[in-house]
Image 1 (cartoon, rainbow, N blue to C red):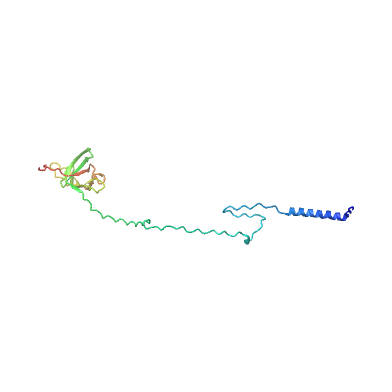
Image 2: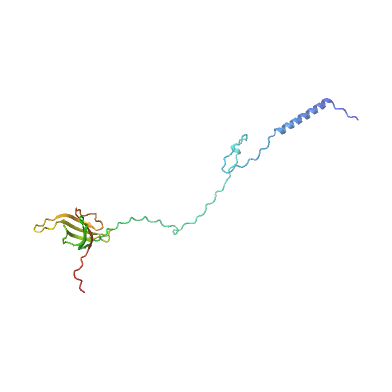
Amino acid sequence: MPSRPTPKPILRRSAWLATVAGLAAAGLVSAQPAPSPPASAPAPGALPTVVEGAPKTTPSEEAPPVNVPTPAPIAVPPISEKEVAAAPAPAAPAEPKPPGVPVRRARYDVAVIEALDKVTAESLRFEAAVGRPVRYKNLVFTVKACERSAPDEPVEDSIAYLTIDSQPRAAPGRPALAPRQTYKGWMYASSPSLHPLEHPVYAAWLITCRAAAPVNPPAR
């Protein structure tokens, strides 16, 4: 049998439905969001980065905390008493040493003196025994004591205590003038300027102290 022709209204309706279905399919495909790249894990210690448009998470959606097991304590062997050094005792203050008995200076019976005449530039070195006056021109030297420094003294020296009188020689037929004391005190051989003789014409200083030589040699 010959087929019946399809009516035109039905054809138009079928074409319209096909067009609507195609438009709907195209709209669904275009409306799907593009897939977002996988989020990379943040570096340790880095601050979290907020991405605009990213959905906010609620506290219930956060990842649960990771339970880290607590390490067991390490057993330390006990320390013996031999391994522990005793603390040093505080040092006791040093006791002051008692002052020793000072060594006495050795005394001698002869002083060696040098005198100078400032006018004539004459100088003379002579010996003066302790307690015996000795004349040099118009000066009379009398040594009272002569000693040397002790071994515990810092400077080796000779010291003499003497008096010096000014007394011109008596002229023939005239009485002698009374002596006038010019110097009295200690003279130091190492420091002649420490306590010098102050005289307009003469100068004198100590050289050393020594023991008198025996007149007769000792018997054998």
